[in-house]
Amino acid sequence: MKACKILKAALLPAFIFIFIAAGSGHASDLKEKVLKQKLPNGITVLMLKRHLSPTVSLYIRYRVGAVDETKGESGAAHFLEHIMFKGTTSIGTNDYQAEKALMEEIKNAGRRLDAEKRKGQTADPETLANLSAVLKKLQDEHKKYFLPNEIDRLYTENGGLDMNASTGQDVTSYHVSLPANKIELWARIESDRLLHSVFREFYTERDVVMEERRQRVESDPEGKLYEKFMSAAYTLHPYGRPVLGWTEDLMNLSPDELEKILEKYKDPRNIVIAVVGDIKPEPTLKLIEKYFGGIPPAAEKTESYIPAEPPQTEERRVNVAFDANPSLIIGFRKPNAPAREDYVFDVIETILTRGRTSRLYTTLVIDRQIAQSVSAVNGLPGSRFPNLFALFAQPRHPHSNIELENDILKEIEKLKTQPVSDEELMKAKNHIKMSYLQSLDANADIASILSYYEVLLGDYRYFADYLDNIDKVTAADIRQIAARYLNSNNRTTAFLNKEGG
Image (cartoon, rainbow, N blue to C red; front, side, top):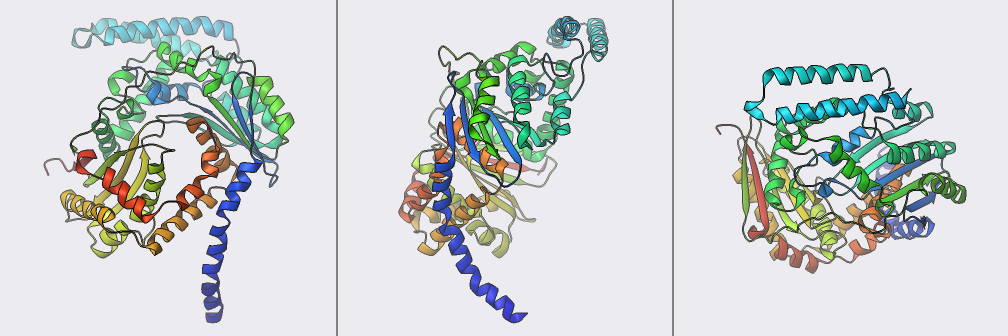
């Protein structure tokens, strides 16, 4: 047994070297095998054959997110994601014409109720009670016309797995994995969802979204701290607004606001579809064109007006009181991908906090034991616009946020003044390469990555070329970039401490 362990230990470095050395080959292979087609109306389709199992993973991404919301309508993009699961004019209904007329009554009742609520303390209690009763009666009547969770049922009964959706600052995504012979079902559902969505249970779902905000932000210390941190880091740019929306905006959202976001979905140039798995590209493309090709091309791409964040000239600090253990966030403004700096910050992130031998984990968690946790994230909260390099940490009792902040900043100063050794730089790059190769394991992961970079940067090959750009990062790059961006006048810091502490 002992001899066997020694042999494994001797072989492990060689195995890792071979595994990592294959990274560029994997990337080149990926770049060559992906088939990219643009439909006549402007929709981009990415296809990759992988005959490992008779399954396929499908992503549809829209270059529309929370940054595209109009001021005062925060949360609309995320709310729309919820509503898009409520069905269409042909999915989830047993009599759409009767349902449509009733839903118009519901919309009018909801509009009147919202208008009365906006009066605040001057609202008439009797009017509020009467309008609430009318709305509830109409909603109860509506239940006999629609079939809840019909999209979920269709996918599940046809072997669908990992069905989900997400809304971020930059992008909204819908994805599912299916048997390979069910691609047409997916195309039928997703094209119908895009073109003929019905905003069923609007006011009920609005309450669900508001409850989600209460649980994830107002009642959650980490969510509260993060929201306050982001709104301090971005004073003008919409990255400072939460994806979940502000409470005062959410409670007044109407179907009209969601319709504005949905119209942006329908611009074919905002849409990227990725299909990875056991496919035949030509018939797959024909199916996609059959269902999505009829979406009219936009006469002119209308970009949302998104104001640039003014230059930062001094540190911004936020203090949040909450009945929870202390924690902190430190963020520095920086360029977004595909800028050269972004690759360098990926390496810095790895050097500082990736793995138990990383600098901050070793120093703060293991050696000095002043931190319970520490992590770094490059690219918050999105990548369409200049973003943040951020560090998250929790002090270990009896140490404080101030003490932990000072030690983190000391380690950051070392990046500016002391060159990273060749050994440490190589270790960080190898860590990144291992993570990269692991991300190429599953169809769903590949479809996610390809579609994300295509919709975000206009070229999926960003990912295929990623390792080559990481390899080019030098110790001098790290010192230079750290000195340029990791400074107090470019920093936002947020502390969470116990109330009264």
